Image 1 (tube, rainbow, N blue to C red):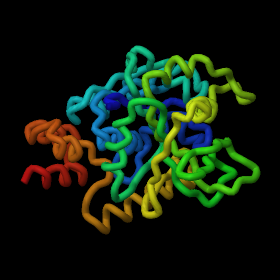
Image 2 (image 1 turned 90 degrees about the vertical axis):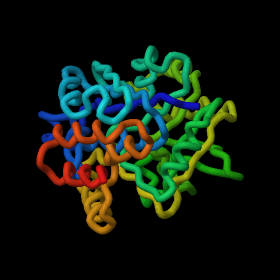
Image 3 (image 1 turned 45 degrees about the horizontal axis):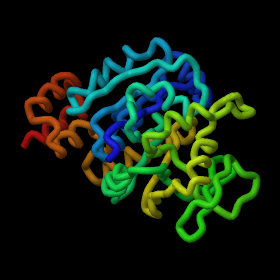
Length: 288
C-alpha cells in the first residue's frame, strides 16, 4: 500500500513568464484556490497522508503560509528545496529520506485531474506493491506529450513527443512507483536536454514487464496548467463545474472531513484562517 506522495512544485515556470518571475506558478489561483490545492487533493483522495512538496530555493515560506505543515487537512507535509530543475526523476533522489524504502506517488504541481470515478481509481493505484503505474489520457495532439502505445492492455512502447504515432494516449503527470524507484533513478543519465527523463525511468520498468496503466476515461479531464492557455482553460473548467454543480473541486478541508482526518473544530479554525470569503462560506456549510 502506497502511503506517501511527492508534489514536484519547483521549476522555472518559463512557459508562463513574466508572471512567474515573482511567484511560483503553483501558488497562482486556479479560479478560487491556489493551483497547489489541486494536486494535493489528488493525493488526499488516494488516501495519502504523508506528503513531500519540492519547491524552488527560498520558496518554502511562501507555501507554508497557505499549507502550513498540513495539520489543517489532517495530513503531514514536509518541504524540500530544489537547487535547479534537473528532470522529474530527481524528485525521488531529493526525496530519498522521505520515501525511506516505501512505495511512493508522484504528481506534478501544475497538473489538474477530474473524473467521476477518480477517487476509486486512485485508491486502487495505491495498492501497487511491485513495479510502476502511470495514468493515461487521450489527447488531440500527441506530438506535444509523452505517448504510450497499448497492445492487449499492456504498454508496449513509450515515446517522448513522437513525430509520428498510432496512439493518442498521453502519459499524465501522475505516477505510482514501488520502493525501487530511488535506486533506479540514481542509475539514469541526463538526456540531450541535460535532464533526467521520466520516460527513461518508466521504460526501465516497462522492459522488466512491471509497468501498468490506469485510464481516466472519456468523461475525465486532465490539464497541464503550465502554459498560459492551459492555465486559463483550467480556471474556466473549475469555474463552470463549481457554478453549475454547487460543490468545490479540491476543497482540502472537505476531503479531510469526509475521511475523518479532521473534526469540525479544525474546520472552524480553517474558516478563521481564510477570513470572510466565498471559500469560508462554503466551509461553513460543511458544519451543518
